[in-house]
Length: 94
Image (cartoon, rainbow, N blue to C red; front, side):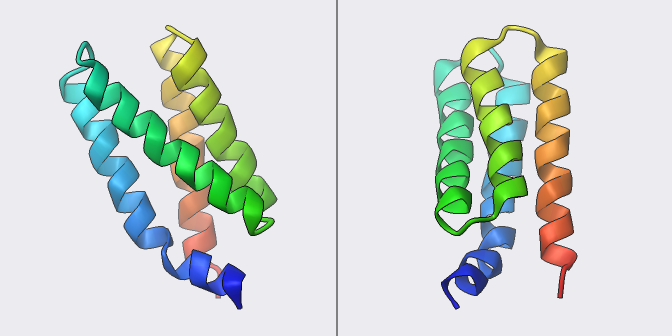
């Protein structure tokens, strides 16, 4: 039941992450846009881990780690795309 509640919140979480991503893309040199995106993804990773949504946890954690530790935008972009794909897959699961 708790896992279902987490899954029900995925659209809202995904919207927050997508908006934060857009903000960061529009203002890449502003620390607050980067920090907000990293924070949303960190929260998602924590929740996914708590609710044993392993594939979502792995995708979010990879994206978070790259955001924090990599200057290679292409790597971050690929990890972000994989995270969004994982969110979409979970949302479409009955």
